[in-house]
Image (cartoon, rainbow, N blue to C red; front, side, top):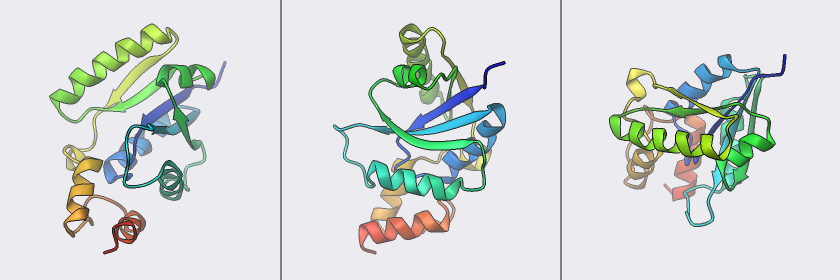
Length: 161
């Protein structure tokens, strides 16, 4: 039987406790979970793709079957290249569902061998997003509830706080 390879794609700018919650549950579903940082040249993030990869590697160092990498282009094509059969996505609110079902259908048309599995975050992370973390950080707010201490340190360093 072939290895079950799943991909959890995202921007992870920065990685939050919500992302780590999904990673911690998704890794149990696959022989290999690839956490893939999407590179979008049209979007300027707070952190570079390489910095996000470093942070994710730090946060997932205790997981044996997780690979942290990046990709550019179509997620469905990246999945094909990596022999993945499943994309993992997080669903927080109804608007996420509308977006994710559209993407799942498009990805399956582009790669008929791919399915999308949506996981709901733990309740305490239901409304957490990287965008909210960035906004709180820009205004000097407390990030303790949102990101691990190492990520807090890197955000403060990046913003000069």
